[in-house]
Length: 187
Length: 187
DNA sequence: TGTGATTTTTGACATCCGTCAAAAAGGGAA
DNA sequence: TTCCCTTTTTGACGGATGTCAAAAATCACA
Image: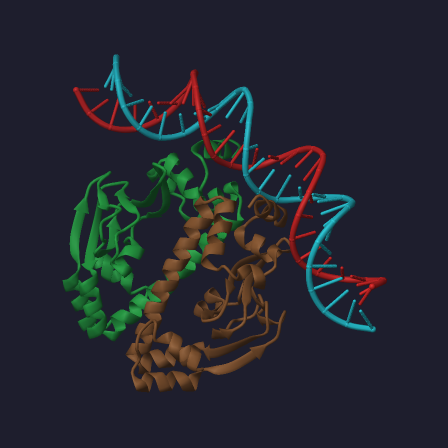
């Protein structure tokens, strides 16, 4: 929990009241490897903070799993579309490692927004950072070669190789596992 | 200006004071076809609302222009990364048609956030919608074929064909103009 | 340590797409 | 209309990537 509060200060320094209100609204969730945090078809009611562990988000298309993001320590995660719209999720979130998460419901978060302007500001600023990050990923996905995307991933998340299977990484990069293997073999 | 205020109500209904404060902070900008709204290397100080017209955002890589978005009526536009961080822009925004825009500076917007909690909420909610839209574009870019992406674009923005050259559209789809031409010729 | 399951690599082949080059079509101005 | 410039299409070719199949390496757990 201290990790979460400490991390949040990177976005925006909260008042003590806001901080303690936040403290009261998050609940710890501990799950083990391969379990599911969110399953497609079900409404996603929580926003999670990942204190320790690793997750992946994926769609299933024609029976194939398409991993579209990974999350590690200090990431906020949820099925964003479902959390915001409160419609059924179209994606799954699975544990790649045993993980410790902190969860807050949408109702509680909305309530916090009403009570504490600075919490809404914090989230507004967090959205800005996450938007910029996604925009960068988008440009990479669309306009760089598979080899460049792989290099990029290694630079930004060097330890991902030790924590995530190459099959999942290939899927994330939008290429086949065989192609990733060949990219790696020619350095 | 009424268009802007009317459009904003789709996101969140503002108090009268907030609405009139907003009203005072936007300034009209009129530019003609092929002019630049934002040039790479320059800091982007404004967020724009596009009342009438069409724009494109693009990077230059190895002397080639890579269009990564289009904007039409009722879109908010800016070089997002530059506007948020106030660093130099890495992209250009160019007019595809003569356009009417409404501009607000970052300073004024931040000031509005402090004065009006509901304006910050409005923007927080707008970010959510824009994030979801980008997420969808990301998944499309990464995991769909060129032909599917083209079909998708036509469904979402049917009139784009009449307003944007095929060269720009091909660039936006991440394919060469020749490939787009072939996709179109086989329906 | 041994065994079976999973992950990763390698090979062969077809397909999609980019590039270069040139032709065709379209648009604007006198 | 005619001319010129821009946009779009078409053709030929090569390279990158996907798919299928099988071998090799690694991992999990008894």
